[in-house]
Image (cartoon, rainbow over all chains, first blue to last red; front, side, top):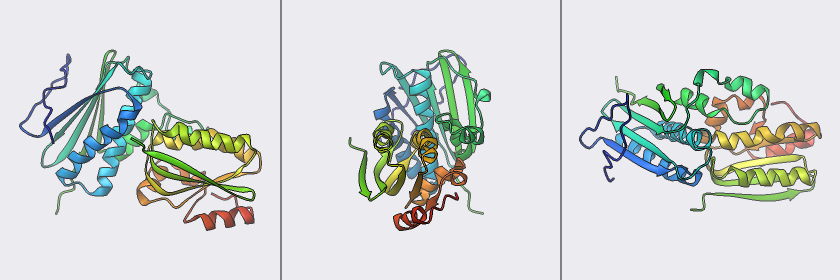
Length: 158
Length: 120
């Protein structure tokens, strides 16, 4: 895989850690037809790192949901915008940061999936899914400068 | 990239939609259109077969939410079958099995329609 380290633009308050051979970044136009490319990008790295197929499926889902949110809610389907996906790996974990320059949102204002389901409401389920499948999820939200960081640990043999 | 396909087969009053490929925020309108056509034709007994579906995200699950009330208000249902463990997991994580009937195969789904079984 081509190492695209350094292609991501640093923002105020956000440090880009570029380590040798284990940071991969993809900057891609904000379009739904690119979701498949984004998923393949992350799957390839997770598989190389030794995650189980089950865990790879969860990572794939989390990244897809985060990027679909950016396309819809941060950029309102404007395809001249860009999403940055940074994947960092070490022996213990995979850490994925999705960055955008949209207006941001308040994750605490979201209804639970149970509430959404009860109302037969569509949408609003992506973040709930991300929280369920990843070990750590952190939102760093500022208008014009939003990052969602998701971490999954590799199960260690006892 | 052609990543998603829906094939429809009608069997008397029950219609089956066979999904193939990847159902995500890009491809869901295709599935939504097929369900809308069924509702427009007043065909409310619907089976969705996931046998050849490799992937689903919440955008795909959201499509069901848009139709289930209309379909049930007209004495129909949307029954789901033949999911891989990977696809079932996404439905399960969001609590869908409490609202939708998810069965092993299309035969079982047909039987449930014949018996008028609506229990999720």
